[in-house]
Amino acid sequence: MNDNSILSLILNASIPVQIVMFALLLASIFSWALVYVKHSYIRQSQAEAKTFEGRFWSGINLSDLFAQLSVRQEKRFGLEAIFENGFREFARARKAELDNSEVVRAAHRAMKVSMSREIEMLESNLSFLATVGSVSPYVGLFGTVWGIMESFRALAGVQQATLAMVAPGISEALIATAMGLLAAIPAVIAYNKFTGEIDAMIVRYENFLEEFTGILQRQAQSPR
Amino acid sequence: MLSELKRYPGALVLSVLLHAGLLAIVFVSLNFDEEKKLINQGEQVKTVKAEVIDQQQLDTAKKRKQAEIDKEKKAEAAEKKRKADAEKKKREAAKRKTEEKKKKQAEEKRKKEKAQRIADEKKKKEAIALKKKQEEAKKKAEKKKKILAETKRKEKEKKAKEAEAKRIAEEKKKAEAKRVAEEKNKVEAKRLAEERKKAEAKRVAEEKKKAEAEKRRLAEEEQKRKQAELKARLEAEESQRRLSSLRDAYRLAIKQKIERNWRRPQESGKMPDCEVRVLQGPGGIILDVAFGTCDAGTNTYRASIENAVYKAEPLPKPGDPALFERELIILFNPE
Image: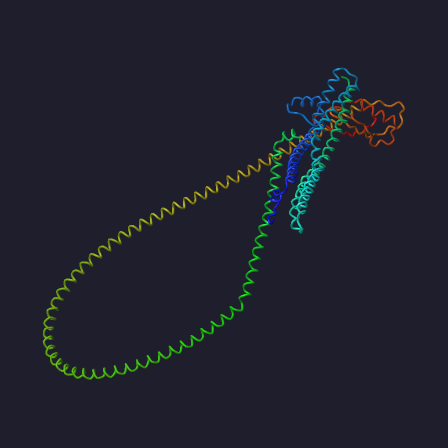
Protein backbone atom coordinates (compact mmCIF):
# COMPACT_ATOMS: atom_id res chain seq x y z
CA MET A 1 0.00 0.00 0.00
CA ASN A 2 3.01 2.29 0.43
CA ASP A 3 3.72 2.25 -3.26
CA ASN A 4 0.99 4.51 -4.63
CA SER A 5 2.64 6.00 -7.73
CA ILE A 6 0.34 6.63 -10.66
CA LEU A 7 1.82 3.78 -12.65
CA SER A 8 1.08 1.22 -9.95
CA LEU A 9 -2.39 2.70 -9.47
CA ILE A 10 -3.13 2.16 -13.14
CA LEU A 11 -1.68 -1.35 -13.17
CA ASN A 12 -3.59 -2.36 -10.05
CA ALA A 13 -6.94 -1.08 -11.32
CA SER A 14 -9.69 -3.51 -12.18
CA ILE A 15 -10.16 -4.62 -15.80
CA PRO A 16 -13.18 -2.41 -16.73
CA VAL A 17 -11.41 0.66 -15.35
CA GLN A 18 -8.29 -0.25 -17.28
CA ILE A 19 -10.31 -0.60 -20.47
CA VAL A 20 -11.85 2.81 -19.91
CA MET A 21 -8.46 4.36 -19.33
CA PHE A 22 -7.02 2.76 -22.45
CA ALA A 23 -9.94 4.03 -24.54
CA LEU A 24 -9.41 7.53 -23.18
CA LEU A 25 -5.71 7.38 -24.01
CA LEU A 26 -6.53 6.36 -27.57
CA ALA A 27 -9.09 9.16 -27.87
CA SER A 28 -6.55 11.66 -26.66
CA ILE A 29 -3.89 10.45 -29.08
CA PHE A 30 -6.24 10.57 -32.07
CA SER A 31 -7.66 13.94 -31.16
CA TRP A 32 -4.18 15.44 -30.89
CA ALA A 33 -3.20 13.97 -34.25
CA LEU A 34 -6.38 15.39 -35.77
CA VAL A 35 -5.68 18.76 -34.20
CA TYR A 36 -2.31 18.81 -35.91
CA VAL A 37 -3.76 17.80 -39.30
CA LYS A 38 -6.63 20.28 -39.19
CA HIS A 39 -4.41 23.07 -38.00
CA SER A 40 -1.98 22.63 -40.86
CA TYR A 41 -4.81 22.31 -43.42
CA ILE A 42 -6.54 25.50 -42.27
CA ARG A 43 -3.25 27.43 -42.25
CA GLN A 44 -2.60 26.19 -45.78
CA SER A 45 -6.04 27.29 -46.99
CA GLN A 46 -5.64 30.72 -45.45
CA ALA A 47 -2.26 31.22 -47.10
CA GLU A 48 -3.64 30.03 -50.43
CA ALA A 49 -6.65 32.37 -50.25
CA LYS A 50 -4.39 35.29 -49.48
CA THR A 51 -2.03 34.72 -52.39
CA PHE A 52 -4.87 34.01 -54.81
CA GLU A 53 -6.79 37.14 -53.83
CA GLY A 54 -3.60 39.16 -54.32
CA ARG A 55 -3.23 37.76 -57.83
CA PHE A 56 -6.90 38.12 -58.69
CA TRP A 57 -7.06 41.79 -57.76
CA SER A 58 -3.72 42.64 -59.33
CA GLY A 59 -5.49 43.61 -62.56
CA ILE A 60 -4.52 40.51 -64.51
CA ASN A 61 -6.82 39.50 -67.34
CA LEU A 62 -9.23 36.79 -66.14
CA SER A 63 -8.64 34.45 -69.08
CA ASP A 64 -4.88 34.80 -68.53
CA LEU A 65 -5.31 33.86 -64.90
CA PHE A 66 -7.42 30.87 -65.88
CA ALA A 67 -4.82 29.74 -68.41
CA GLN A 68 -2.07 30.01 -65.80
CA LEU A 69 -4.07 27.95 -63.33
CA SER A 70 -4.99 25.20 -65.76
CA VAL A 71 -1.37 24.78 -66.85
CA ARG A 72 -0.35 23.90 -63.30
CA GLN A 73 -0.32 20.19 -62.55
CA GLU A 74 -0.89 20.01 -58.79
CA LYS A 75 -4.32 19.66 -57.29
CA ARG A 76 -6.16 22.91 -56.73
CA PHE A 77 -8.10 23.73 -53.60
CA GLY A 78 -9.66 26.73 -51.91
CA LEU A 79 -10.28 29.89 -53.86
CA GLU A 80 -8.33 28.61 -56.85
CA ALA A 81 -10.69 25.67 -57.27
CA ILE A 82 -13.76 27.89 -56.95
CA PHE A 83 -12.44 30.34 -59.52
CA GLU A 84 -11.39 27.65 -61.94
CA ASN A 85 -14.71 25.79 -61.87
CA GLY A 86 -16.71 29.01 -62.17
CA PHE A 87 -14.72 30.37 -65.06
CA ARG A 88 -14.72 27.06 -66.93
CA GLU A 89 -18.48 26.85 -66.62
CA PHE A 90 -18.80 30.46 -67.76
CA ALA A 91 -16.68 29.86 -70.86
CA ARG A 92 -18.60 26.69 -71.74
CA ALA A 93 -21.97 28.40 -71.36
CA ARG A 94 -20.88 31.31 -73.52
CA LYS A 95 -19.69 28.99 -76.23
CA ALA A 96 -23.06 27.32 -76.13
CA GLU A 97 -24.60 30.74 -76.94
CA LEU A 98 -26.85 30.72 -73.96
CA ASP A 99 -28.73 33.71 -72.71
CA ASN A 100 -26.63 36.20 -70.68
CA SER A 101 -28.45 35.64 -67.40
CA GLU A 102 -28.37 31.91 -68.03
CA VAL A 103 -24.58 32.01 -68.50
CA VAL A 104 -24.04 33.84 -65.23
CA ARG A 105 -26.40 31.54 -63.39
CA ALA A 106 -24.58 28.45 -64.63
CA ALA A 107 -21.22 29.83 -63.50
CA HIS A 108 -22.69 30.78 -60.13
CA ARG A 109 -24.05 27.29 -59.65
CA ALA A 110 -20.74 25.69 -60.48
CA MET A 111 -18.97 27.91 -58.03
CA LYS A 112 -21.49 27.14 -55.29
CA VAL A 113 -20.87 23.45 -55.70
CA SER A 114 -17.15 23.91 -55.65
CA MET A 115 -17.40 26.08 -52.56
CA SER A 116 -19.47 23.59 -50.63
CA ARG A 117 -16.91 20.95 -51.48
CA GLU A 118 -14.19 23.16 -50.08
CA ILE A 119 -16.18 23.76 -46.92
CA GLU A 120 -16.73 20.07 -46.50
CA MET A 121 -12.97 19.52 -46.75
CA LEU A 122 -12.39 22.13 -44.10
CA GLU A 123 -15.00 20.77 -41.73
CA SER A 124 -14.34 17.06 -42.19
CA ASN A 125 -13.69 15.11 -38.99
CA LEU A 126 -14.22 18.18 -36.88
CA SER A 127 -17.09 16.29 -35.28
CA PHE A 128 -14.60 13.80 -33.87
CA LEU A 129 -13.02 16.56 -31.82
CA ALA A 130 -16.46 17.64 -30.64
CA THR A 131 -17.30 14.07 -29.65
CA VAL A 132 -14.09 13.58 -27.72
CA GLY A 133 -14.57 16.93 -26.03
CA SER A 134 -18.09 16.20 -24.86
CA VAL A 135 -18.02 12.45 -24.24
CA SER A 136 -14.65 11.65 -22.71
CA PRO A 137 -15.45 13.28 -19.33
CA TYR A 138 -18.49 10.99 -19.09
CA VAL A 139 -16.44 7.96 -20.03
CA GLY A 140 -13.88 8.86 -17.40
CA LEU A 141 -16.64 9.34 -14.88
CA PHE A 142 -17.99 5.91 -15.72
CA GLY A 143 -14.57 4.42 -14.97
CA THR A 144 -14.47 6.24 -11.67
CA VAL A 145 -17.92 5.15 -10.61
CA TRP A 146 -17.10 1.56 -11.45
CA GLY A 147 -13.87 1.68 -9.46
CA ILE A 148 -15.57 3.18 -6.42
CA MET A 149 -18.31 0.60 -6.62
CA GLU A 150 -15.74 -2.17 -6.50
CA SER A 151 -13.88 -0.67 -3.57
CA PHE A 152 -17.10 -0.35 -1.58
CA ARG A 153 -18.10 -3.88 -2.38
CA ALA A 154 -14.80 -5.06 -0.91
CA LEU A 155 -15.77 -3.26 2.30
CA ALA A 156 -18.94 -5.26 2.69
CA GLY A 157 -17.35 -8.26 4.42
CA VAL A 158 -15.32 -6.22 6.91
CA GLN A 159 -16.46 -5.53 10.48
CA GLN A 160 -14.52 -2.36 11.14
CA ALA A 161 -14.15 -0.14 8.06
CA THR A 162 -11.32 2.40 8.04
CA LEU A 163 -10.51 5.16 5.61
CA ALA A 164 -7.25 3.41 4.73
CA MET A 165 -9.23 0.55 3.21
CA VAL A 166 -11.29 2.74 0.86
CA ALA A 167 -8.85 5.49 -0.04
CA PRO A 168 -6.53 3.57 -2.46
CA GLY A 169 -9.49 2.25 -4.43
CA ILE A 170 -11.03 5.69 -4.75
CA SER A 171 -7.81 7.37 -5.84
CA GLU A 172 -7.32 4.54 -8.33
CA ALA A 173 -10.78 5.19 -9.70
CA LEU A 174 -10.37 8.96 -9.84
CA ILE A 175 -7.47 8.63 -12.28
CA ALA A 176 -10.02 7.68 -14.94
CA THR A 177 -11.83 11.01 -14.48
CA ALA A 178 -8.53 12.89 -14.63
CA MET A 179 -7.68 11.20 -17.90
CA GLY A 180 -11.09 11.97 -19.32
CA LEU A 181 -10.71 15.65 -18.53
CA LEU A 182 -7.18 15.63 -19.90
CA ALA A 183 -8.47 14.28 -23.21
CA ALA A 184 -11.53 16.56 -23.33
CA ILE A 185 -10.03 19.97 -22.56
CA PRO A 186 -7.64 20.25 -25.53
CA ALA A 187 -10.24 18.78 -27.84
CA VAL A 188 -12.86 21.38 -26.87
CA ILE A 189 -10.37 24.24 -27.16
CA ALA A 190 -9.23 23.05 -30.59
CA TYR A 191 -12.82 22.52 -31.77
CA ASN A 192 -13.84 26.06 -30.85
CA LYS A 193 -10.75 27.53 -32.44
CA PHE A 194 -11.23 25.58 -35.67
CA THR A 195 -14.93 26.38 -36.03
CA GLY A 196 -14.15 30.07 -35.66
CA GLU A 197 -11.42 29.93 -38.27
CA ILE A 198 -13.52 27.87 -40.66
CA ASP A 199 -16.43 30.30 -40.37
CA ALA A 200 -14.09 33.11 -41.29
CA MET A 201 -12.90 31.11 -44.29
CA ILE A 202 -16.50 30.45 -45.42
CA VAL A 203 -17.30 34.16 -45.28
CA ARG A 204 -14.20 34.84 -47.32
CA TYR A 205 -15.21 32.27 -49.96
CA GLU A 206 -18.75 33.63 -50.17
CA ASN A 207 -17.53 37.18 -50.58
CA PHE A 208 -15.25 36.14 -53.38
CA LEU A 209 -18.02 34.16 -55.03
CA GLU A 210 -20.38 37.14 -55.08
CA GLU A 211 -17.75 39.55 -56.32
CA PHE A 212 -16.66 37.19 -59.03
CA THR A 213 -20.25 36.64 -60.11
CA GLY A 214 -20.63 40.39 -60.48
CA ILE A 215 -17.56 40.53 -62.67
CA LEU A 216 -18.82 37.67 -64.81
CA GLN A 217 -22.15 39.44 -65.24
CA ARG A 218 -20.38 42.50 -66.61
CA GLN A 219 -18.31 40.39 -68.93
CA ALA A 220 -21.36 38.54 -70.16
CA GLN A 221 -22.97 41.84 -71.12
CA SER A 222 -19.97 43.00 -73.12
CA PRO A 223 -20.05 41.91 -76.77
CA ARG A 224 -18.56 38.52 -77.52
CA MET B 1 -11.01 10.18 -40.15
CA LEU B 2 -8.53 7.38 -40.67
CA SER B 3 -8.07 8.29 -44.32
CA GLU B 4 -7.25 11.84 -43.43
CA LEU B 5 -4.81 10.70 -40.76
CA LYS B 6 -3.23 8.37 -43.31
CA ARG B 7 -2.39 11.34 -45.48
CA TYR B 8 -0.38 12.86 -42.62
CA PRO B 9 1.28 9.88 -40.89
CA GLY B 10 3.60 12.25 -39.04
CA ALA B 11 0.68 13.69 -37.10
CA LEU B 12 -0.17 10.43 -35.37
CA VAL B 13 3.47 9.74 -34.53
CA LEU B 14 3.80 13.24 -33.13
CA SER B 15 0.72 12.79 -30.99
CA VAL B 16 1.89 9.42 -29.62
CA LEU B 17 5.27 10.89 -28.74
CA LEU B 18 3.55 13.78 -26.99
CA HIS B 19 1.52 11.43 -24.82
CA ALA B 20 4.50 9.21 -24.05
CA GLY B 21 6.47 12.24 -22.93
CA LEU B 22 3.62 13.45 -20.74
CA LEU B 23 3.21 10.07 -19.07
CA ALA B 24 6.95 9.76 -18.50
CA ILE B 25 7.04 13.16 -16.83
CA VAL B 26 4.11 12.29 -14.56
CA PHE B 27 5.62 8.94 -13.49
CA VAL B 28 9.11 10.26 -12.90
CA SER B 29 8.05 13.22 -10.79
CA LEU B 30 5.70 11.16 -8.61
CA ASN B 31 8.22 8.37 -7.95
CA PHE B 32 10.85 10.89 -7.01
CA ASP B 33 8.63 12.43 -4.31
CA GLU B 34 7.91 9.05 -2.81
CA GLU B 35 11.58 8.08 -2.40
CA LYS B 36 12.21 11.28 -0.49
CA LYS B 37 9.35 10.58 1.87
CA LEU B 38 10.62 7.06 2.61
CA ILE B 39 14.10 8.29 3.47
CA ASN B 40 12.74 10.83 5.92
CA GLN B 41 10.68 8.24 7.77
CA GLY B 42 13.71 5.95 8.26
CA GLU B 43 15.71 8.70 9.90
CA GLN B 44 13.02 9.51 12.42
CA VAL B 45 12.69 5.91 13.59
CA LYS B 46 16.42 5.64 14.32
CA THR B 47 16.57 8.68 16.57
CA VAL B 48 13.64 7.51 18.70
CA LYS B 49 15.29 4.12 19.49
CA ALA B 50 18.52 5.72 20.60
CA GLU B 51 16.74 7.82 23.22
CA VAL B 52 15.02 4.86 24.87
CA ILE B 53 18.25 2.95 25.45
CA ASP B 54 19.96 5.94 27.11
CA GLN B 55 17.27 6.42 29.73
CA GLN B 56 17.23 2.81 30.85
CA GLN B 57 20.97 2.43 31.43
CA LEU B 58 21.71 5.88 32.72
CA ASP B 59 21.74 5.15 36.50
CA THR B 60 23.77 1.92 36.54
CA ALA B 61 26.33 3.40 34.20
CA LYS B 62 26.83 6.40 36.46
CA LYS B 63 27.38 4.29 39.57
CA ARG B 64 29.81 1.99 37.88
CA LYS B 65 31.84 4.86 36.59
CA GLN B 66 32.09 6.44 40.07
CA ALA B 67 33.36 3.20 41.65
CA GLU B 68 35.98 2.77 38.99
CA ILE B 69 37.30 6.26 39.48
CA ASP B 70 37.66 5.74 43.30
CA LYS B 71 39.55 2.47 42.87
CA GLU B 72 41.98 4.01 40.46
CA LYS B 73 42.74 6.85 42.84
CA LYS B 74 43.57 4.51 45.74
CA ALA B 75 45.84 2.32 43.70
CA GLU B 76 47.76 5.31 42.48
CA ALA B 77 48.48 6.58 46.02
CA ALA B 78 49.86 3.18 47.19
CA GLU B 79 52.09 2.90 44.19
CA LYS B 80 53.56 6.30 44.80
CA LYS B 81 54.49 5.50 48.40
CA ARG B 82 56.15 2.24 47.47
CA LYS B 83 58.26 3.86 44.83
CA ALA B 84 59.52 6.59 47.19
CA ASP B 85 60.70 4.04 49.82
CA ALA B 86 62.65 1.99 47.36
CA GLU B 87 64.40 5.05 46.03
CA LYS B 88 65.58 6.09 49.51
CA LYS B 89 67.14 2.70 50.20
CA LYS B 90 68.95 2.71 46.93
CA ARG B 91 70.40 6.13 47.50
CA GLU B 92 71.86 5.15 50.96
CA ALA B 93 73.50 1.99 49.66
CA ALA B 94 75.16 3.91 46.87
CA LYS B 95 76.58 6.47 49.31
CA ARG B 96 78.25 3.80 51.43
CA LYS B 97 79.87 2.13 48.47
CA THR B 98 81.41 5.35 47.17
CA GLU B 99 82.99 6.15 50.56
CA GLU B 100 84.72 2.78 50.73
CA LYS B 101 86.03 3.14 47.22
CA LYS B 102 87.49 6.52 48.03
CA LYS B 103 89.50 5.14 51.02
CA LYS B 104 91.00 2.32 48.97
CA GLN B 105 91.99 4.67 46.16
CA ALA B 106 93.81 7.03 48.55
CA GLU B 107 96.02 4.14 49.93
CA GLU B 108 96.90 2.93 46.50
CA LYS B 109 97.91 6.40 45.47
CA ARG B 110 100.32 6.74 48.32
CA LYS B 111 102.12 3.46 47.43
CA LYS B 112 102.33 4.33 43.80
CA GLU B 113 103.88 7.72 44.52
CA LYS B 114 106.76 6.15 46.46
CA ALA B 115 107.65 3.71 43.72
CA GLN B 116 107.41 6.46 41.14
CA ARG B 117 109.84 8.69 42.92
CA ILE B 118 112.55 5.96 42.94
CA ALA B 119 111.99 5.16 39.31
CA ASP B 120 112.14 8.81 38.30
CA GLU B 121 115.55 9.32 39.76
CA LYS B 122 116.91 6.36 37.82
CA LYS B 123 115.36 7.54 34.62
CA LYS B 124 116.82 11.02 34.92
CA LYS B 125 120.40 9.70 35.01
CA GLU B 126 119.85 7.51 31.98
CA ALA B 127 118.21 10.29 30.05
CA ILE B 128 121.11 12.69 30.50
CA ALA B 129 123.52 10.18 29.02
CA LEU B 130 121.28 9.45 26.11
CA LYS B 131 120.76 13.07 25.31
CA LYS B 132 124.47 13.72 24.88
CA LYS B 133 124.77 10.91 22.37
CA GLN B 134 121.78 11.97 20.43
CA GLU B 135 122.92 15.57 20.07
CA GLU B 136 126.14 14.54 18.45
CA ALA B 137 124.38 12.36 15.95
CA LYS B 138 121.96 15.08 15.18
CA LYS B 139 124.67 17.61 14.36
CA LYS B 140 126.23 15.25 11.82
CA ALA B 141 122.95 14.54 10.12
CA GLU B 142 122.07 18.19 9.83
CA LYS B 143 125.31 18.94 7.99
CA LYS B 144 124.53 16.25 5.43
CA LYS B 145 121.01 17.47 5.01
CA LYS B 146 122.11 21.03 4.37
CA ILE B 147 124.37 20.03 1.48
CA LEU B 148 121.64 17.95 -0.07
CA ALA B 149 119.07 20.68 0.28
CA GLU B 150 121.40 23.15 -1.40
CA THR B 151 121.77 21.01 -4.53
CA LYS B 152 118.06 20.32 -4.61
CA ARG B 153 117.18 24.00 -4.39
CA LYS B 154 119.46 24.85 -7.30
CA GLU B 155 117.81 22.25 -9.49
CA LYS B 156 114.37 23.45 -8.54
CA GLU B 157 115.18 27.02 -9.41
CA LYS B 158 116.39 25.93 -12.84
CA LYS B 159 113.22 24.00 -13.50
CA ALA B 160 111.05 26.86 -12.31
CA LYS B 161 112.78 29.28 -14.66
CA GLU B 162 112.18 26.99 -17.62
CA ALA B 163 108.55 26.48 -16.72
CA GLU B 164 108.08 30.21 -16.33
CA ALA B 165 109.43 30.81 -19.82
CA LYS B 166 107.20 28.16 -21.24
CA ARG B 167 104.14 29.56 -19.48
CA ILE B 168 104.83 33.07 -20.73
CA ALA B 169 105.14 31.84 -24.30
CA GLU B 170 101.88 29.95 -24.05
CA GLU B 171 100.09 32.90 -22.56
CA LYS B 172 101.33 35.08 -25.37
CA LYS B 173 100.03 32.57 -27.88
CA LYS B 174 96.71 32.35 -26.17
CA ALA B 175 96.30 36.10 -25.96
CA GLU B 176 97.09 36.37 -29.64
CA ALA B 177 94.48 33.75 -30.52
CA LYS B 178 91.98 35.45 -28.30
CA ARG B 179 92.56 38.80 -29.90
CA VAL B 180 92.11 37.34 -33.38
CA ALA B 181 88.90 35.60 -32.34
CA GLU B 182 87.57 38.74 -30.78
CA GLU B 183 88.27 40.72 -33.88
CA LYS B 184 86.49 38.09 -35.90
CA ASN B 185 83.53 38.18 -33.58
CA LYS B 186 83.38 41.93 -33.78
CA VAL B 187 83.29 41.86 -37.55
CA GLU B 188 80.62 39.18 -37.49
CA ALA B 189 78.50 41.10 -35.00
CA LYS B 190 78.77 44.22 -37.11
CA ARG B 191 77.68 42.33 -40.18
CA LEU B 192 74.74 40.79 -38.36
CA ALA B 193 73.64 44.15 -36.98
CA GLU B 194 73.73 45.64 -40.44
CA GLU B 195 71.71 42.78 -41.85
CA ARG B 196 69.18 43.13 -39.12
CA LYS B 197 68.89 46.80 -39.77
CA LYS B 198 68.38 46.17 -43.44
CA ALA B 199 65.70 43.54 -42.75
CA GLU B 200 63.95 45.86 -40.33
CA ALA B 201 63.97 48.67 -42.86
CA LYS B 202 62.64 46.32 -45.50
CA ARG B 203 59.85 45.12 -43.22
CA VAL B 204 58.86 48.67 -42.31
CA ALA B 205 58.79 49.60 -45.96
CA GLU B 206 56.64 46.58 -46.79
CA GLU B 207 54.25 47.33 -44.00
CA LYS B 208 53.96 50.87 -45.18
CA LYS B 209 53.25 49.62 -48.66
CA LYS B 210 50.66 47.21 -47.39
CA ALA B 211 48.95 49.85 -45.30
CA GLU B 212 48.87 52.15 -48.28
CA ALA B 213 47.45 49.45 -50.49
CA GLU B 214 44.81 48.68 -47.86
CA LYS B 215 43.96 52.34 -47.64
CA ARG B 216 43.71 52.62 -51.37
CA ARG B 217 41.56 49.49 -51.54
CA LEU B 218 39.24 50.80 -48.85
CA ALA B 219 38.99 54.13 -50.56
CA GLU B 220 38.20 52.40 -53.83
CA GLU B 221 35.59 50.25 -52.21
CA GLU B 222 34.05 53.24 -50.54
CA GLN B 223 33.95 55.02 -53.85
CA LYS B 224 32.45 52.02 -55.57
CA ARG B 225 29.85 51.65 -52.85
CA LYS B 226 28.98 55.31 -53.14
CA GLN B 227 28.70 55.04 -56.87
CA ALA B 228 26.51 51.95 -56.55
CA GLU B 229 24.32 53.72 -54.04
CA LEU B 230 24.04 56.72 -56.25
CA LYS B 231 23.21 54.50 -59.19
CA ALA B 232 20.62 52.59 -57.20
CA ARG B 233 19.09 55.81 -55.99
CA LEU B 234 19.02 57.22 -59.46
CA GLU B 235 17.48 54.04 -60.77
CA ALA B 236 14.92 54.00 -58.01
CA GLU B 237 14.11 57.62 -58.72
CA GLU B 238 13.92 56.87 -62.39
CA SER B 239 11.53 53.97 -61.90
CA GLN B 240 9.57 56.02 -59.40
CA ARG B 241 9.31 58.81 -61.91
CA ARG B 242 8.36 56.40 -64.65
CA LEU B 243 5.71 54.80 -62.45
CA SER B 244 4.31 58.11 -61.33
CA SER B 245 4.17 59.36 -64.90
CA LEU B 246 2.50 56.09 -65.91
CA ARG B 247 0.05 56.47 -63.05
CA ASP B 248 -0.76 59.99 -64.13
CA ALA B 249 -1.24 58.78 -67.68
CA TYR B 250 -3.45 55.93 -66.45
CA ARG B 251 -5.69 58.23 -64.43
CA LEU B 252 -5.89 60.73 -67.24
CA ALA B 253 -6.81 58.01 -69.73
CA ILE B 254 -9.64 56.77 -67.51
CA LYS B 255 -10.92 60.28 -66.93
CA GLN B 256 -10.79 61.13 -70.61
CA LYS B 257 -12.58 57.95 -71.61
CA ILE B 258 -15.38 58.67 -69.15
CA GLU B 259 -15.65 62.27 -70.31
CA ARG B 260 -15.74 61.19 -73.95
CA ASN B 261 -18.69 58.94 -73.20
CA TRP B 262 -20.57 61.62 -71.36
CA ARG B 263 -23.63 63.17 -73.03
CA ARG B 264 -24.89 66.47 -71.72
CA PRO B 265 -28.38 65.92 -70.25
CA GLN B 266 -31.18 67.83 -72.00
CA GLU B 267 -32.49 69.73 -69.01
CA SER B 268 -29.34 71.68 -68.28
CA GLY B 269 -29.53 72.85 -64.70
CA LYS B 270 -26.55 73.32 -62.48
CA MET B 271 -23.65 71.14 -63.41
CA PRO B 272 -20.99 71.40 -60.70
CA ASP B 273 -17.78 69.39 -60.41
CA CYS B 274 -18.48 65.93 -59.06
CA GLU B 275 -16.37 63.40 -57.19
CA VAL B 276 -17.08 59.93 -58.55
CA ARG B 277 -15.91 56.74 -56.82
CA VAL B 278 -15.55 53.84 -59.25
CA LEU B 279 -14.94 50.26 -58.08
CA GLN B 280 -13.36 48.24 -60.88
CA GLY B 281 -12.59 44.59 -61.24
CA PRO B 282 -9.92 42.75 -63.19
CA GLY B 283 -9.82 43.72 -66.84
CA GLY B 284 -11.38 47.12 -66.18
CA ILE B 285 -14.88 45.82 -65.45
CA ILE B 286 -16.97 48.29 -63.48
CA LEU B 287 -18.41 46.83 -60.28
CA ASP B 288 -19.86 49.87 -58.62
CA VAL B 289 -20.25 53.62 -59.06
CA ALA B 290 -20.82 55.97 -56.15
CA PHE B 291 -20.80 59.72 -55.73
CA GLY B 292 -18.62 61.58 -53.26
CA THR B 293 -19.12 65.32 -52.90
CA CYS B 294 -21.59 66.32 -55.58
CA ASP B 295 -23.76 68.79 -53.77
CA ALA B 296 -25.80 70.74 -56.22
CA GLY B 297 -26.05 68.11 -58.92
CA THR B 298 -29.50 67.04 -59.99
CA ASN B 299 -30.49 63.41 -60.29
CA THR B 300 -30.47 63.50 -64.08
CA TYR B 301 -26.98 64.96 -64.00
CA ARG B 302 -25.81 62.20 -61.72
CA ALA B 303 -27.48 59.58 -63.85
CA SER B 304 -25.71 60.97 -66.91
CA ILE B 305 -22.37 60.66 -65.19
CA GLU B 306 -23.09 57.10 -64.08
CA ASN B 307 -24.11 56.24 -67.59
CA ALA B 308 -20.88 57.67 -68.92
CA VAL B 309 -18.86 55.55 -66.52
CA TYR B 310 -20.65 52.36 -67.53
CA LYS B 311 -20.26 53.23 -71.22
CA ALA B 312 -16.52 53.65 -70.68
CA GLU B 313 -16.29 49.97 -69.74
CA PRO B 314 -13.79 48.32 -69.98
CA LEU B 315 -11.63 50.99 -68.48
CA PRO B 316 -8.17 51.36 -70.02
CA LYS B 317 -5.36 49.22 -68.67
CA PRO B 318 -2.40 50.72 -66.84
CA GLY B 319 1.08 50.60 -68.41
CA ASP B 320 2.31 48.56 -65.42
CA PRO B 321 0.16 45.93 -63.66
CA ALA B 322 1.40 47.19 -60.30
CA LEU B 323 -0.45 50.44 -60.89
CA PHE B 324 -3.89 48.81 -61.07
CA GLU B 325 -6.23 50.49 -58.61
CA ARG B 326 -9.36 48.77 -57.45
CA GLU B 327 -11.01 51.90 -56.26
CA LEU B 328 -10.71 55.00 -58.40
CA ILE B 329 -11.67 58.48 -57.35
CA ILE B 330 -12.33 60.73 -60.33
CA LEU B 331 -13.08 64.42 -60.21
CA PHE B 332 -15.57 64.92 -62.99
CA ASN B 333 -16.10 68.35 -64.42
CA PRO B 334 -18.51 68.90 -67.29
CA GLU B 335 -16.37 71.31 -69.31
